[in-house]
Image (tube, rainbow over all chains, first blue to last red):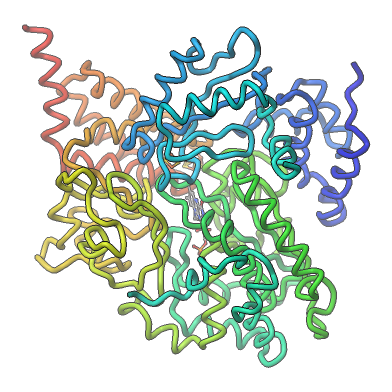
Length: 178
Length: 435
Ligand SMILES: Cc1cc2nc3c(=O)[nH]c(=O)nc-3n(C[C@H](O)[C@H](O)[C@H](O)COP(=O)(O)O)c2cc1C
Ligand code: SF4
Ligand code: FES
C-alpha cells in the first residue's frame, strides 16, 4: 500500500507547515505525526514516519527520534479503541486500580494488550489533568470522568457499537459532526 | 466570598463565544493597551502588580519580561505554556475550556508589551479537544480584528497559533517546551543562555503559564497598583487552585492569596471538608513536586501560626516543616491513605517522565521507583528507607533541569514526616518471613 495522506489531510498538513517561519518547517513535526496517526490506523509505522519526513524534507531519523520520545505516538498497532486509564495519585486515591481491574476482567486482557478481535487496547497512563473528576480515562480525544464500574460497562458497550477511537484527531471529527 | 478576577464570568452561558465574552467586558485590556499605552508601560503595570508566575516556580512576571532582549534584531516570541502535566493540576484546562477568550486576550496584550508578532500556545497533546476550542476562539478573534494585521487600526500585528505536544511531562519545563516546539525531543537545554536572550529559534522569547497570561488582563484593566492590593504581602492577586483527592467537592477554585488553608479545606465554599466523614491525614499543596505535609503542619506552621494559601506561608519552615504553593495542585489525603503507595505512584511518574539526559535523574528515579515498589509490596528491607533518602539526596541539585529535584523532594518529605509507615512496611515483611 502506498503511504499518502488523503487530499483533505494534505491540505491540513500544508496549512500547519505554513504557520512556522521560513526554514523552521520542522516545527510542524508533532502536529503532523498526530495527523499521520489518525490517517493510518492509529499508529506510526516506519513507512509512515518516512512519509512524514519527506513532507518536511528532514531525515527519517529526525522523525524516529521524536516519535519514540512522546507517549501519545504508538509505535505498534493498537485496537480500534485505545483505552487509557490514569493511574497517578489523585486518580489512585479515588479508585483507579479498581477501574483498571474491572476493564481487565471485562475485556479479558492485561494492561498493554489488545483484545483478540482487535477492538480494544488497554493502557495505563500518568496524570491527564482530570484529577478533580477522578478516576478517569481517555479514549480518543474524549475524557470520561468520575468513573464507576457501571459507567465503564456502559462506555465499553457504546464503544463496541461506535468503534473508532484510537486516534486523538479522528474521534474529535466524529464528535464535532454529531 | 473571595474576589474573582479570572473566573468571575465562568458560569455565564455562552462565555466561550466572542460575543458574550465581549459583552462582559472582554478585550478591554487590548483596547486600553494598544490605544493608550506604550509596550513598556504595560510591562511596568505588570511589574507593579507584583504578580508571580503561576506555572510553579513563582518568579515575578514583570521582572521576567524586563529581561527580554529588546536590542536584538531577531523577532521576539511570546509562548504560552499550556502543557499542564504536573499531577494534581488541572486549572489551565478548566480556564481554556470554559473561557478561552481570556487566554487569547492575555496573549494579545502580553505580546504587545513584549513586541512579539508571532505567538504560540503550546498545549499538551492529550488536551486535543481544548486545542479545538482555542482554535475556534482564535478564528473569532481574527474575524473581529483582534488578531492579524493592524489590530484595532494600530500598527501592532499578531499571529497566534496553538501547537500540540504529544505526551511528555518534561515539555512543561520551558526550555524542553521550546525544543519540542522546534520539532525535537523534549530535552531541557543547559542554561544560560536563558530564553529571554535565546529561546525559540534562538530568538528572544518569554514563556509564561496560561494562568499568568490570563492574569495580565485584570492587571492592565485595574492597574498594577490596584492588583497589588489584593492578596497578602508579596503574594499578590488571586490564584487558581486545583483541588483533588479525598474531599467532598473537588474542582478548580479561585482564591485570594492569603486564605487560611483550614478554611480552604473545610469550608463549604471550597473543598467542603474531607469525604466520608474521615479525618485529614496529609496534603500535597502545590502539585506532585512539592513536599507532602501531615495535618498538623499543613493547618499550622511549626511556629503555631495558621498556615495560609500564599507563597510565603506555605514555604514557612523551609523543607523541614514547610512546602510550596507550586502550581496550586492541592491533593488531599484522608486517614486511610497508604503514604508509601502514594509515594510509589509519584516515583513511577517521575521515572517514566525523566528525559534521560542526566544520569542522577535517569538512574535515580528508576532506583526510587524500584525501592518503593519493593516496600509497597512488602519485600522491603530496613536499609531501603535510608537508601531511598540517600538516592533522593544525590539527585537533588545535580541535574540539568529541576525535574530531578521535583522527583527528590516528595521522597525526602514523605520519609521525614511518615517514617513510621515506611518502617511498618518493612516490619510487615519480616513478620511474614518469620511467622
Ligand atoms: C519538570 C517541569 C515541568 C513543568 N511543567 C510546567 C507546566 O506544565 N506548566 C507550566 O506553566 N510550567 C511548568 N513548569 C515551569 C516552567 O519551566 C516555567 O517556569 C513556567 O512555564 C514559567 O511560567 P510562569 O513564570 O508564568 O510561571 C515546569 C517546570 C519543570 C521543571
Ligand atoms: S533532570 Fe531529568 S528530566 Fe531534567 S534534563 Fe536531567 S534527565 Fe532530563
Ligand atoms: S491524577 Fe489522574 S488525571 Fe490527574
